[in-house]
Length: 339
Ligand SMILES: NC(=O)C1=CN([C@@H]2O[C@H](COP(=O)(O)OP(=O)(O)OC[C@H]3O[C@@H](n4cnc5c(N)ncnc54)[C@H](OP(=O)(O)O)[C@@H]3O)[C@@H](O)[C@H]2O)C=CC1
Ligand SMILES: O=C(CO)COP(=O)(O)O
Image (cartoon, rainbow, N blue to C red; front, side):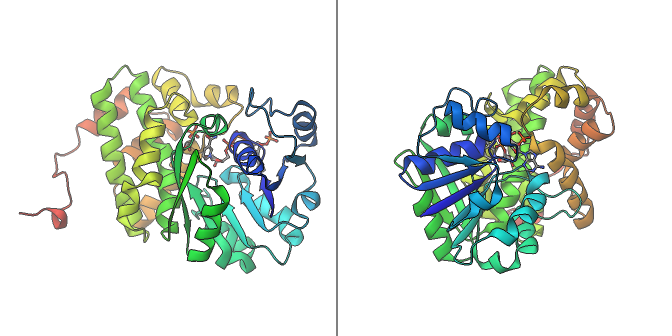
């Protein structure tokens, strides 16, 4: 089976490596030819996944027609703000016999408030039935080091989920399936907002109590919005939900948590972003989540404070004071209380 991985950042490179190591025929598409050439010559992605040797069999190109020629599965791993543009380049070259397209991107489009699978369905309607989503706690570097990892694949059709499960499964990469596409996508996107919040708390010098509170109340917030948008609430207790939330709020490898950490220590967002080569999806997702919450009239207090810090210049310490001085309330919504 031939597979195209579109996006030669850390995650695209790690997933392409995983698939190629399984003996599959894999082409990695980079949008810049100089990066593609560097990867081919060095057998390593020096910009996004340094120090990881890539298999000789892995093909790399910056030409979309070459990447998509004869493929049966497409893996989309460009940042969320580049997905629509990438699909527009690719759509006329997608072979008729494509069996599945899977998004490994974690984000929500800021302008349209659409999830990545919705963007795919909109840009390439013929593929709507064959869309899947891969998400869960999985730092690219650790996957490339073959550290035991478990993730979730979501698809509306069981045969698509099954195909993708078999495709990605390895002795170190365990893949579960679900049909809750909405829940898995929202969980993967929104945890990045909470990772920024957890980083801010750490940057301000708070401790593990604060982090645990943010993870738990963050999960409540994600579930609240997810429920309104049609997700299965149990998804948020799974790998794409709690699993990824814990990973990104605690893991030093998280770029979103790093952004928060530096904000909490007093750096400006502009300076932080200017110094980063890699994407921190949570910065854009905060704006999307804030807008979604307003549109759906759902209360997201942590997201709202992260939004004010990122986009309205609020001082992190002031945001924390405001968060804590909100009116006391029950932990669970009334309809979930047993007495
Ligand atoms: N890294 C990780 O551990 C994980 C990441 N993800 C998700 O995967 C997605 C990709 O992230 P990741 O690989 O880490 O990102 P990186 O920051 O490592 O790399 C970004 C890649 O996307 C390319 N790119 C940037 N802007 C565009 C655009 N507008 N159109 C097309 N390509 C573009 C970059 O190319 P160029 O060099 O030319 O700028 C680069 O190849 C994100 O949604 C992320 O949340 C999910 C799980 C794990
Ligand atoms: O999504 C991720 C791990 O599951 C990666 O998180 P960061 O983008 O914060 O590094």
